Amino acid sequence: MDGQEKGPQQGMAPVAAEGTSDFTARLARLPASRLTGALGPMVAALQGLIRDVRPSRAEFRATLGYLTELGHHSDARRQEWVLLADALGLSALVEDLNSPRPEGATPNTVAGPFYRPDAPDRAPGATISLDGKGLPLAVSGRVTALAGGPLAGALVEVWQANGQGKYENQEPDLQPENNLRGRFRTDAQGRFAFTSVMPGGYALPSDGPVGRLMTSLGLCLERPAHIHFRVSAEGHERLTTQIFDRADPAIGRDAVFGVKPGLLADFRATSLPGGQTGRALELTLVLCPQRQS
Image (cartoon, rainbow, N blue to C red; front, side, top):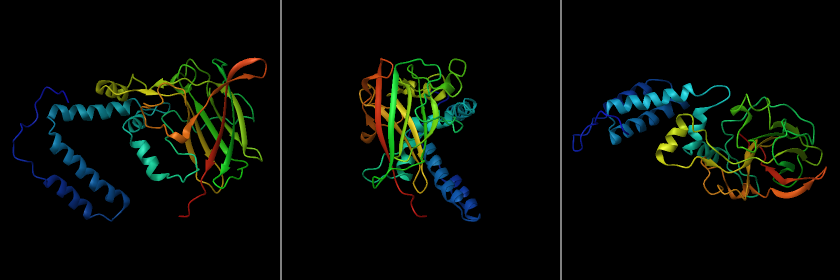
């Protein structure tokens, strides 16, 4: 931290922990709940951090100002708090703890800050590229159960960046509404297909507080090229994942810790209908059965 006001000097007597114990005592007088059980350890950890780091008053105010700025940069189109959780690896940790996947199942990842639940339904084989800008990409896939059987009628939500690495909700004045997004249903064999354009790798937004923090630390903002999928099928756990271009040069330094070996794929060069040269992606998404509560 770089505040002008200096914190307590080394060698000073440790600060007593009455604040923590007082807060814990207050919680103890409340009915037990998930919230009180989590808030006590969280406050104790924060107060322990303050005792270890010993910030000055100016540094503490700057920290509160940073948290306030995160809120100011969040709206219906952009979630800076989600971006912070992603960049700190917190989102990936929560996903790993809550969505363990057995061998053979497609790994789960974070949805990221650019997901929209209101993407339109599209017909089988339709394009999600509304402006047609970029290297053509044909995507075909299957959704199956862990045992291998096809899952008919599964909902497949798709979203991606364009060839310049920008999502539609990052550029509302430059891309059509719901560009490179769509919802598809699998057929009786669990198959789905659509056309798009080759996504570009990109860096996390650098114009907000998260990007500035990571840059000041000298940390990488890069994300390798990928396509997002969210798959829902009756009797199965919902899968949220990303399929990455194995050949992307940033594949080993994903800024949000989303890359896993089971999510690497080949976006192979191919000749498309109409004589176009483009890329093709073939994939299988394997869902887990719903766990009994």
